[in-house]
Length: 561
Image (spheres, one colour):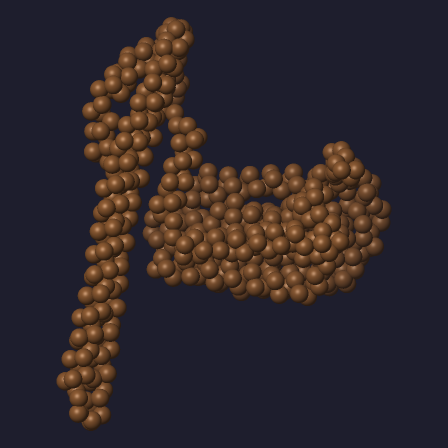
């Protein structure tokens, strides 16, 4: 890398361009950036008076005006010099990269040859050692001698494998260094171009570097381990797309079908976003399906038009139709979230405080909710909800006509998108999100570093309850709710998260993975239904995918240990 820097810096033509660019920018764009940064710091500085702050900002603004005039004046000359400098940098990079590539390719060939000789030598020495052992014990027939002979042969074989393992590791390390040298040449080229462009990088250069890095680091075994499941599912989708028209089922990739898959995914997205946090903590949640039934029943009771047909715990059926629509919607959403959060916090307390595994605490919660719902409602569905409210929230917008077909956009996709953004922000932009990863990766280390593991765990359970509550509220817009609504939803949510790369070992995963997992899993189910595959066979497909995803995750964890 240092030689590469000298290679660029020793070029007089490129150095002259950079010096001239620095001179032209000094009183223009460079000064503008400096003054803006100074103004920002002045606004945050609490150690100076308001009068002094305002005075210095006004002085800087005057200098800014002059700097902008200078920048505009020098713009054409700077642009011309930038083009010349970039062209010169490209020529230098090509020349140096070719030289580096030649040197490193020769080194790589030498390393491969040396590695092959090393392997051959280890195998020959091991074979010779085994012959010596066999010769030494030749003719000895006692049980002790036979056992000693086998032990020495075992040790010789173990030594051979250890030497081969060490040789392979050293070879891989030196190969990686050789490849890194070639990559460093391109990195320095990008950095030099950033300097020429005054800190800016082109998308083209980033793309080329990403591709170059991929080629340098590509290993088929790792690629198949990380992407094999996705490639298999993609191949399945391609087969479905091809087979669907041939079987008379129509075009699977039509806009109505795509929107339907997204609509089906939108409500289940809430459950996956909730359970994803628990899986990140190396836990799980078996109560999701019952939470869905709980929230959906509460929402259905409130949004039902007229007098309810359900008598909750023997009390006379209620009639909420006299309330304004806005009040009913708010009340339904609030109660759905409230009860889901309450039960989620209940199971979370036992896991966070008493260290009971979430599998057990959420299983107990599932059974409690299940019993309460059936005792309270007798299994009677709550009936339909108000048609106006259903169309307002769960309906579709008409986009127009395409190929003689009306195209409609599901409204439920919008709240799902909002939930995704909110979850991504919490996971990636808050201290709580960083603490989630820390606790999931190693709760003991997180506790030692000052993180309150109890609060983080309870926070994740409460956050999950919020997502369950909102999702169950929207569930009522898809079908009539009863005590059995949401049966098996927890398994689909868990499967979606695992497919999306959220590891059961804890501390590994992204929101984008959970989102992709939901869409993939929902799309898979829709494809099978679209092709008329028996529902029972669909369970087989789902089971195979789940075990494959978990198995690949386990293999990756074993490799890292």
